[in-house]
Image (spheres, one colour):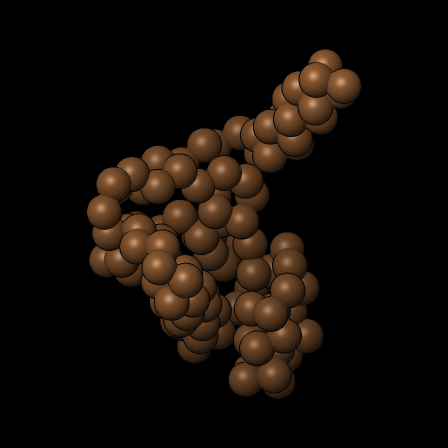
Length: 113
């Protein structure tokens, strides 16, 4: 995960994904406010960069509704909403939604034959 590598290099800490998840989800953790700030700021920069890359490909999330599916979007929901770059985000909170969608696509492709 790029976010994890960036935070670890900036903070000179060996945080793992569970640590990052706990901080981003405001769950109990043993890290100080500086670590929490860097994690949240880095996540916000990550989202801004990602949305910027979509805009470069002529995908503007400020018009219409955008559906976010999967664990990453659930984890970064706060940063997505606070970015000001997504007009009407819709979040599918089911962690298995992507897998179910791919299952439906697979079944549909097999039926066509």
